[in-house]
Amino acid sequence: MTVPGRSRALTLEDIDDLRAYERGRAEYRRRIIELKARRRVTVGPIVSFVFENRETVRSQVQEMARAERMVTDEQIQAELDVYNALIPEPGELSATMFIELTGEHALRNWLPRLVGIEDAVVLELPGGDPVRAVPEAAHADALTRTEVTASVHYVRFTLTPDQIDRFEAGPVALVIDHPEYGERADLGAETRRELLADLRPDRA
Image 1: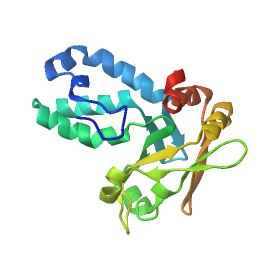
Image 2: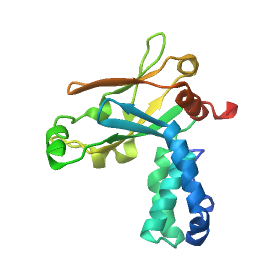
Image 3: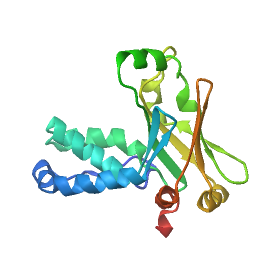
């Protein structure tokens, strides 16, 4: 089963069974770590983003199935139904945002202050016309709080063809304009090339 309207959705056939996955896991994880490094952007001291694609999502499902010893199609499909929403369609970027805090004091200090941070993420493109992220609808209700934010959020950017052209030309910055956390980071050339494959898969 695929998610209606999501052409890149993973199916059961894309997920290896536990024995097959275990045999190739070490090499597969090495490739995924390298892939995520190209797709990771750190914005300020405590926030990072990993831009998801079909392969990063597949790795999450494989690892979840391994950790939970999932062996039935029904179990795997339940995970696919959750994670397929994170795969971007052409013209989209999808990212997992991590608020990276260690220690009880940091958690108590920052998480109440950062309520609404998932609505404060922007891609700055040359020529103005920034693209504001939208929280991923499938997860927003579970993660939204009025008094304290979650440490993980899922956000999506939708770009027009003109915005994609300007993304390719660069420079591009990922910006958080929250009142309690105003930070920005420029996207390197390697990261932009990687993300253009999401925006324009026909040219990858």
